[in-house]
Image (cartoon, rainbow, N blue to C red; front, top):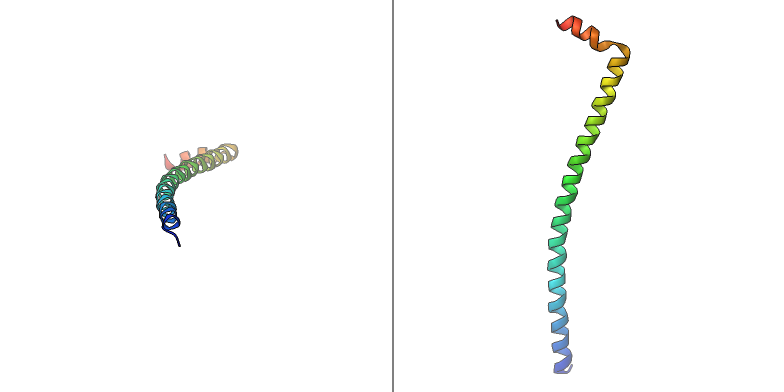
Length: 71
């Protein structure tokens, strides 16, 4: 191989190493953002479940019966 081809290959390897480092950094940031999104979605899920359960309790009057028993 000629010296110029070796130099060119070394430059390409160096460039690819830099790109891989940037991708690894971006992966960490994306992973953190996805974790935060999952947390938000879990909060929404439990808020909706709570609202549905409250509506069911209100519909059947269980809340009044529970209050009467506890008081």
